[in-house]
Image (cartoon, rainbow, N blue to C red; front, side):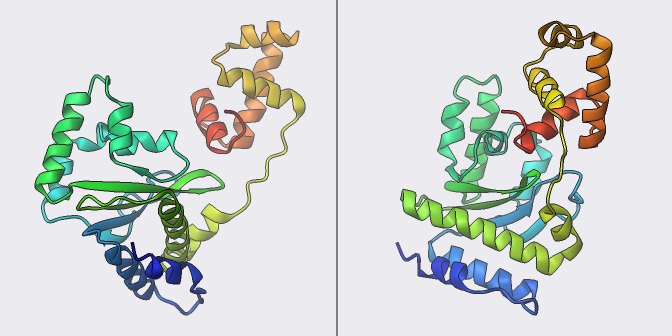
Length: 247
């Protein structure tokens, strides 16, 4: 497979004067050369992204986005659900295999049938992670194309470079928010409490393990919640997981 356009994109030094349209044109050329008919590069929805402004580049087949929304496929899309398990690119067949016995399996298969009817026979997904977890996703799709492990690695790199360059050109403020360092000064006791919380332990259970009162554990939890700017304990676990504080 001719990966030269991908390599050229990766080797091209981005300049502040490069506008979003120029970056999109280079990305479209690189993806199209590989033989994919469709692609999208999007910002992952969340507190840092306006739901109305998540698309950075690309397009889907005519009628597919409308059908996807109408049939509420976002709630069961196996590729979306699999993003939480993957740190690198994957082929669409991987999540379908992983969710073989899922209660929503029939709807997943129906979604894939509808996708094929719109020219989306196969595809790949490449997540982009920042300091705060998943921030973007590059999806390439169309005809069935086999990518080797080395080609998958190059596509992972392409997704990252294209995402950060386009975000910088299109929304500099969002680029600054997502790329700024995460500075957290957690005490040893707070890290212990956070780790036990990740295992689903209650304040009483953590207190018994650490030799502290439940009241003291709650005091530590309030401090952790404030530092992570979390709304509740469930939110604490989600943020801590994204930041790699717990596994």
